[in-house]
Image: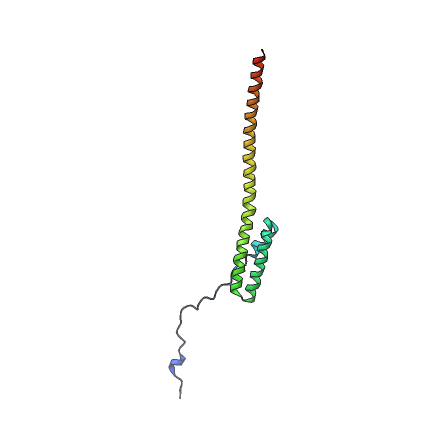
Length: 126
């Protein structure tokens, strides 16, 4: 004789997807290594590397909040290092080009000025 309850034999009803666990933040370690080795403007790449390593350590230990904090600092320092390393040489190049253009115009004007002065003084002597 079967004494089991038929309601217990049915599979439990399906529910919605399980609640999403907080994702571990990115640590930006590769970007920090790149900034440290290739574009280390004012040692910002090294600072970004330190915060990226701290973010990875906190992520591995399970402290998501601290990992997010260090990850955001690493991202900020990486962005500053990249922007400084890209924008400053461009700015320096633009200043050199404008300086050369300005000096060439100044040289042309002074050649014209001295030519006029020399030809004018020759006419007065005769």
